[in-house]
Amino acid sequence: MSKVLLHTPDGVRDIYGKECIDRNAVINNIHNKMKSFGYAEIETPTFEFFDVFAEEINASDTKELYKFFDKEGNTLVLRPDFTPSIARCASKVMLENGNPIRVCYEGNTFLNVSNLQGKLKENCNIGVELMNDSSVYADAEAIALLIEALKSSGLQDFQVSVGDADYYKGLCEEAGITPETEEEIREQIIGKNYFAAESIMREKNIPEKYSDLIIKVSEFIGSDDALDKAISQVKNDRSIAAVNRLKELYKVLTLYGVEKYVSFDLSILSRFNYYTGVIFSAYTYGVGDAIAKGGRYDNLLGKYGKDAPAIGFSIVIDDLMSALYRQGIKVENGEEVETVTYTKETFEAALKKARELRESGKNVVLKAE
Figure 1 (cartoon, rainbow, N blue to C red):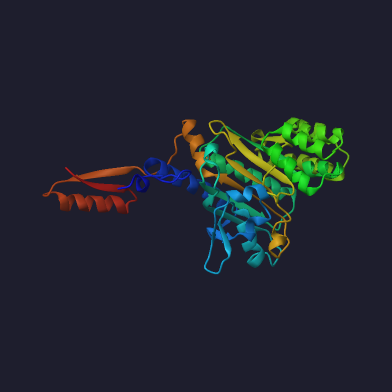
Figure 2 (spheres, rainbow, N blue to C red; figure 1 turned 90 degrees about the horizontal axis):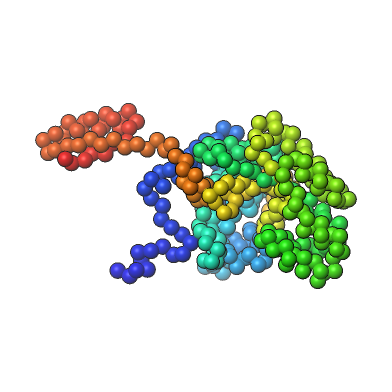
């Protein structure tokens, strides 16, 4: 048999045995936590029309989408992200009465990332979306739920970094930076390539005081005291409103009792263009990237026909499982298996015993002696 048939392509893998059992247990625990907050399950297609995602992903990142064509010649993509799919669905059928909508989902996303990045191309994600609620209480609920969801997996040592996309966007507006240039700068800042970001701003003749401040955003990290430092550096209303919103958010999070897991980082940005306000990422040791990301996207649903504010987050199960294993955290999966042995002569009695144990909720395997 060809070796090609025995191995998976680069970027995907088989999951089996204890890892598969543990993974399903973690997903189930997180799902139960989400449902305890009143979130109902939703499923969207694995592939969508390309246009569902095209506007929300930087042009340079569209090459990482898995694209193909249907018989009518339409361009389709495997979903790289759940949020636009759910926004499309919700704007069509769920937002008529104006009441808050809470949905949770679980499934795989697909990105054709470079092999050199060492990342999986197929990832399992579980997350929530809260729509039709623009309040700071919705922001706090999303962040508090993320923290409780991660704790339900067994993870304890982690931090949720919280920023606001409007702080950076307000700075760019104050500096007179065009949306196209802002996107170029943001891409470099996300990649921590501050030299390249400065170079772009020099080429575009951005005043030095603003280019310095945009780079300095990465310094506004820490407790809520970092917010006082950030607000003292700006004059535009959009950035000031963003910081004041974060201050209010912190007060609500203290009521949830989760403030020890929260820090602020105004340099948090996203490749996705749809984030409009609070934005956050969860980090833990043993994993090089964020294990969860989320934020507010108040302008996204309107692109599919129905305006509504919204916020959500997504946990990358593959990275969460890596963190749990590397931190030596045992997953309680409830999948212990009892063995009942038999011979030809004792099979009938052994089968009866196995049936009784199974009816009582036990997992039983029959094994010949």
